[in-house]
Length: 92
Image 1 (tube, rainbow, N blue to C red):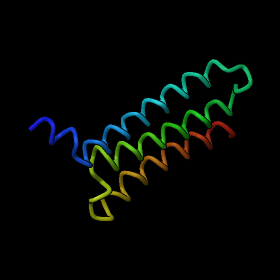
Image 2 (cartoon, rainbow, N blue to C red; image 1 turned 180 degrees about the vertical axis):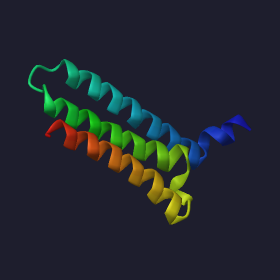
Image 3 (cartoon, helix red, strand yellow; image 1 turned 30 degrees about the horizontal axis):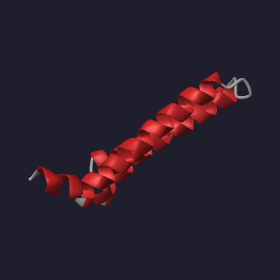
Image 4 (cartoon, rainbow, N blue to C red; image 1 turned 60 degrees about the vertical axis):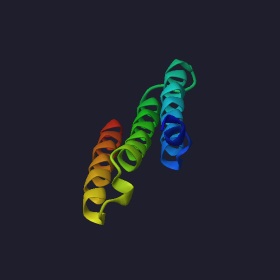
């Protein structure tokens, strides 16, 4: 039973998404320590990575990629509006 689960496509896809989420988190941690990226651009980059992670979580862990269009648009639209609004507030 466990061998079948570990070899299933969906489990392998979730492992890949989890690894990508961890890499994005490590990349953001590295960028925050980099002296060349600071101020507003650090905020833009952080919000961009947060949006990308939100899309990955919504599509793969919340299974929205198989959902009807409206719930997917609501969740991803909300994330886009929040991140976009925060980016715009950095330059206001």
